[in-house]
Amino acid sequence: MVFRNLIFTLMDLKRLLPTILRDYVLPLDGVHGVAHWARVLENGLHVGRESGANLEIVSLFAVLHDSQRLNETTDPEHGLRAANFATTLRGGLIELSDQDFHLLYKACEGHTHERTHSDVTIQTCWDADRLDLGRVGVTPHPSRLCTQFAKQSKTIRWADGRASFHVIPDLVRVEWGIELS
Image (cartoon, rainbow, N blue to C red; front, side):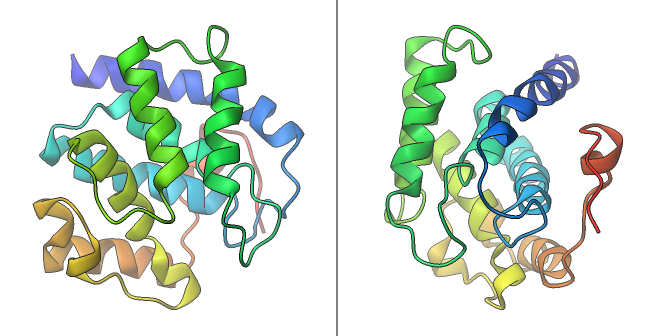
C-alpha cells in the first residue's frame, strides 16, 4: 500500500511541477532549486518510512517549501508564501483532507523559524529540509532535528554527503524531465 501511494504521489508531483515552476523566480539549479527539492523529497521518504509520517504530505512539502522564495539569502516570509500558494492549488492539483492540508500548510509556513512540532509528519518535513543543509556548507546537528531516525549519525552522514556534493537525484531528470547542469 505504501509503495502504491508513493507511485501515485510521484505522478502527482510531476503534474504539479509545471505549475510551481511557472512562477519560480530563482535559478532552477540554485541552492534552493529543483535538486534541493528532490533531495528533500528523498530525505523525507527515507526518514518518513521510519517515523510513520504521511508520505504524501512530505512529498508535497518537498516541492513547495522553497518554491516561493524571492532570493537565495534571507527571505523570512517564503514559508508563509509557500503555504498560501499551496492553498491556491487545493481542490485542483492538491487534494488533501482538511486535517492533512493543515499539516502541509503548517509544515511550509514554519519550516524556517520553528524548532519542532508535536506532529511526526511536520517533524519529518522539517528534518528532510534540515538534512540538506550541507548544500550551503552546514552539517546538520542532531539537536536541530526532530525525529530519532534523522538524529542518527548514519542518517546525517548519508544526507549530508549527498547535499555537500550537490548530488542531483535521478528523479529530477528521469521522473520530472528537468535537465540541470
